[in-house]
Length: 200
Ligand code: TMP
Image (cartoon, rainbow, N blue to C red; front, side):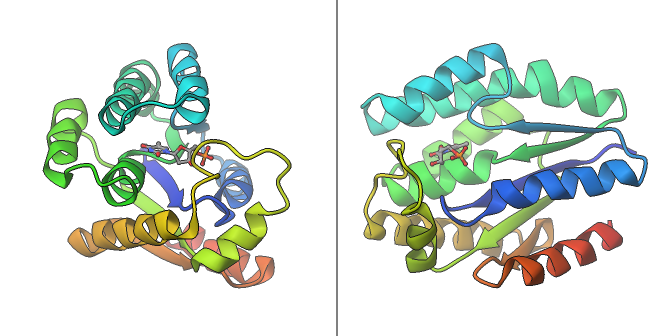
């Protein structure tokens, strides 16, 4: 049976590195896995990503474009793949909009809930791996990057709020999440992921 799995966490938490390993491990077990990302995942979504990561815009525009890219992503890629029996792993989904646009930027949580209801009332991830890490650790990891996008350039207080937003989402619906202590060593994070692979 198909499953929809999302990876979440603040920039610098290391989720993207682990996503590739996680997908390969599932493939080795014979599953047909599609890896995708947000914002992005479709030609239009990737164009919106380019704008979202690089152009200054109002908070509302940012939230609407995130959900516009998501609607396209769901209709063009996620739902068709799930219907074809594939497993879909997305690097971010709506939790990121609540954490970044909601908690980070201060966009009204109820407005985001309305957008979530409009865009995917009938679809939620079966499982979300939340890579949790203290802000200073994430910042330290990001400091090795040569060029930072509009979100990565934000200050520590923004990321403290983002982390709080993720925690709020986890508290609202704890059974959907596996919280991973991403401050641990690579080997320890892999051990946590292996346990998750076995359990699903
Ligand atoms: P990435 O660096 O993990 O690929 O994500 C791109 C950036 O977009 C990241 O800084 C988080 C941000 N983002 C939001 O602000 N809201 C969203 O809904 C999504 C999907 C991403």
